Length: 72
Image 1 (tube, rainbow, N blue to C red):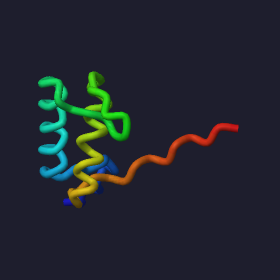
Image 2: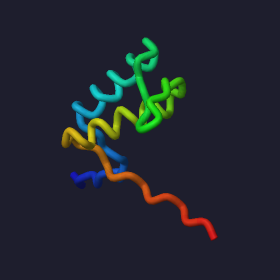
Image 3: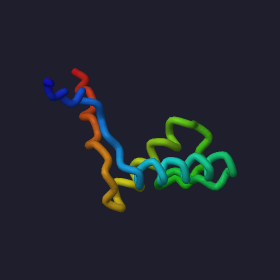
């Protein structure tokens, strides 16, 4: 039998998903705050980003951030 190659999907660790889950709960509760401004986060996408950022800081298995597109 031939061995299957990995599909190149991004892999996240369990600790990372726990952090995101926690961030989503805090968003729903209304206690999740954004960085410097400290404003309450309402966006689902932003809550996920904050959760992943926290996971990275704690050393969880999270793929590197994608480089932003360079505008001319």
